Image 1: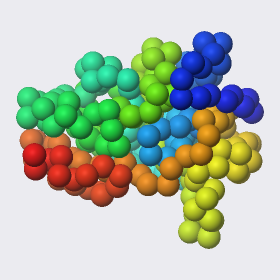
Image 2: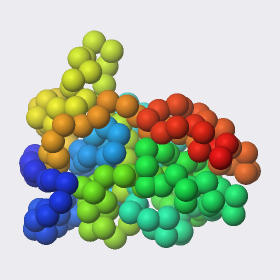
Image 3: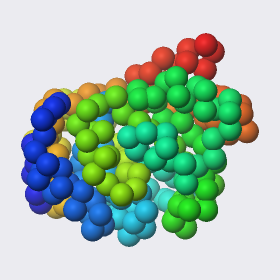
Length: 207
């Protein structure tokens, strides 16, 4: 397992290239976001997605995936955004939100079971730097966490790396992480519904 340290600014381009190479080659990494650390892989590499499903014991036929990019334009091929959803998403992102939208046929077959996907643009400079190095969105998923683990585990990159070192290819250490998840909002059929209240205010869909 590789271990890379990044910072809020002035990150080494060679370090960012190391992360991009890992993900572009189908690797699985832990990366920072504006909420918690997350499992991550190239969003178009089906085998990498299957690895994340195995790590978390997820059934891809029932699970809704989320992808992350540095801009709304980065999702243009992969989701359908109507005008009403676009206004809310543009207002909220970057920020601690996941918006559920209809998925397009440009995503791999593994996404087709749910026909919808979450999109994220994190308000985190390090995560954005990583996104800008990848040639596609990044699939992100919360790291495995059990009720008997101390919540401090979620914030400590060294503990996360130790727990998952045999299952991932790279750990990105960007300092202390958060414990609060993103707020998940469904935008299917122009009906906006909060599916999970997290770090972001739900008032965004009422404004």
